[in-house]
Image 1 (cartoon, rainbow, N blue to C red):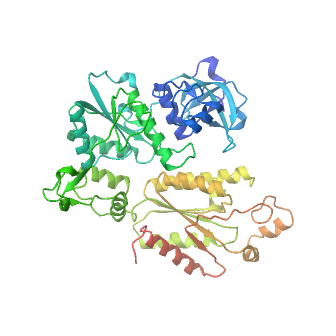
Image 2 (cartoon, rainbow, N blue to C red; image 1 turned 120 degrees about the vertical axis):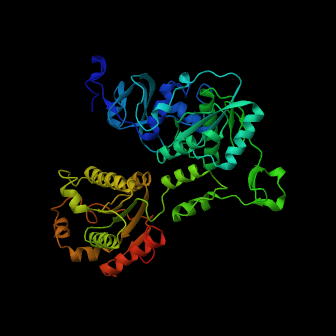
Image 3 (tube, rainbow, N blue to C red; image 1 turned 180 degrees about the vertical axis):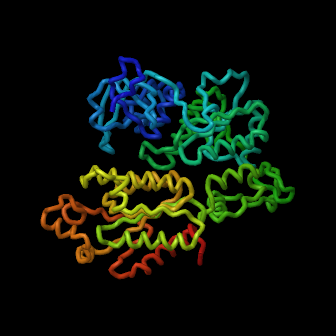
Length: 498
């Protein structure tokens, strides 16, 4: 792919590439100067040094690798246009190094960036400002770089620390893809409860563990990165639950707060009688309430925040869902999928879309071959449509063969960014699938007339992460559908007995 014709002549014929969502976020922060001293994507040596010790090769502290993965065919180019998913050019990468990641075997490019235009997409874009667009402030600025809404406890702690530091407040919603709009709305909804002059500036900063070093080290590096971002936006302090060595600005840790059931207010634990401390609503309990569609108690969070939480996480029986069947040709997955779709339509209350493998092949994926690359593309297309159905609260029922674990995992990630995902392995034995062979496909494959046929001349990678395993040689279609319905009811996606 080459860059769009609207570019200057010197750039028009350059190859173009659309990075992943995380890489696009990194690109935006690189171009905005938030990631200084980084001038572009890191090379192999800098990346290894960051992973090993949290420093660049020159000794500069830096917490996480900032890299760009590309197809191997782009590694021979000296300049590449980086564009957003819609094809809008954002920057030119002057390639300094092409290298292969030893852990993933993927190819990566390092080099400096020449900005073309600022990203201009997404809700609340008017709030997403560069550090140089923030007016300078006198005195202290307390930043809150958060991936979660601020509930009554956090609001009280924030006000207390801001008063202690005599600081203005800067709220940095960290955008990570799913529910970004709800997070920003929830933070804007409580702005009136924050000190006067509080600013809200969304920042694209997905949570990741790019070091493979474990959750505690990942959390520490994430804190270091959040402190760096806060410093780039002019903060003098960062509000956080715990300190870490080497942060770009001092971390302000609030004293413990709890809900005083006697006077019905949140306040420092030191000022509450021990027998008056009410147990806090845990994250797990909050998710249970939202999944069940039950109200969030007012003592825990303001009503405006509770409303946004309910929008971001609807009750399970209303939430978008993909039910993804996988299995050999002739395993019965299409029959069970059709039966499930009919049963859900009969019950009502949900919009159901059936994406059967054969139907998709004739329409959505017409023209594709049965090579591994085209089979993967076929599954990705199914996953994309399923994710869109799920995003809008429907139920997508998919029934392709989907023989490769990596592609199924990619679809799971795609759908989970929009809603819920259930994987069902229709594990009917190969011998039974061959015996059925209504289309004569196995016979042709055995005769060598069909190359790369799953189960015969091409592997089927059995899933080890299926939510349900069915064997239709032992179950009737109605029994198999009943097992799936029981699973959905137990998971809360359908009403029990509906």
